[in-house]
Amino acid sequence: MPFIQVTMLEGRTVEQKQELMRKLNSAAAEVLGGDPNRIRIALIEVTGDDWGIGGESFNSLQAGS
Image 1: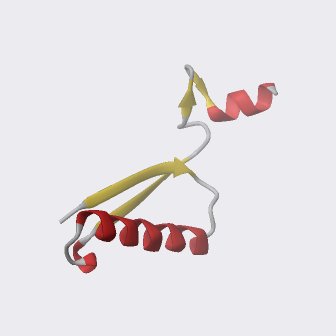
Image 2: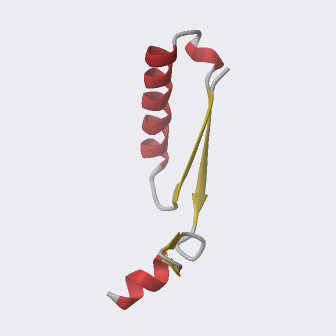
């Protein structure tokens, strides 16, 4: 049973997250084969303070631009 974990910045709508899960599920089933109902997906949302790029938080970088 495949397990897909996506970590992303918060802020997407429920509809966007549901569409992402549907498309990831379809792609995994197509590429890996097997039962699509056995694929598991976890979306992990983090704040801009918890997301680092080059040693700086995303929010710090956004504030500096």
